[in-house]
Image (cartoon, rainbow, N blue to C red):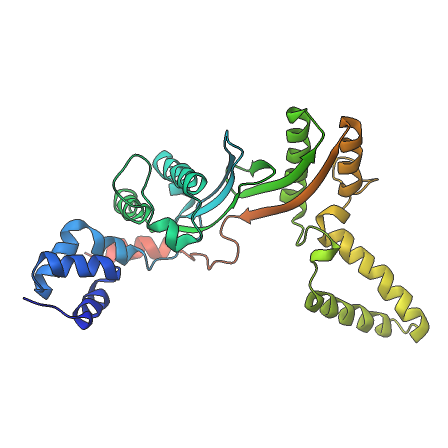
Length: 305
């Protein structure tokens, strides 16, 4: 029995399973819709798709620098913190990071179609399998990969926050000291959460919004217009010091900035170090959280006979 693109769409709407898997199911069942639904259920794909609609805002942030210098940071979400502590979930996260390091996917979609380590299955296949085995929705949310320069990774509080710092190092042959510097910078980023690397990265829209706030504050304080400009300039400096990594006070020695600390270490080591960029992921940031009520959950279990 032949089937059409509309049949594939209908099966997708019935099961929530991806288009390619729906097409495979119809091919395997000669276009028989009921048989295709049963096929997907037997494969566990329909069950995985049902779980995929559930909120996943817990999970794990993982960061690592490999022997070849490739740096990867990755966030994988689960529904509960309990599952995030599961070794099977943690191994899946590490394995996905390995795929990213090796294959350099352009985005999440291309990552999902890549082969999982030592397997003929794709990352998407393995993710669905983990959903069924672990019993919770699992989503690979985001990643970044550095292939150039010197990268240093730091993971805080068992995966609540992850940081990946990338630097250019010239004329220095002391990898231990460079890594120590990178770790200090990464810890700074984890603790202080800078929005930008330096002043040059602050976009004009952000600057203009901040200026408007500061001008309004100065006017509210009744300052003369001539004084307003000086006050705003001074407070903009404070904005940079709070929001730009290299302008921030170095947490281990708050009398100097991060930039001055980097310069001092580079001078001591006899070369040059430039912080190129950084990535900071905090588990679940910006995601809707589950709002479970234990009493309601127990009541449902007792009442749902």
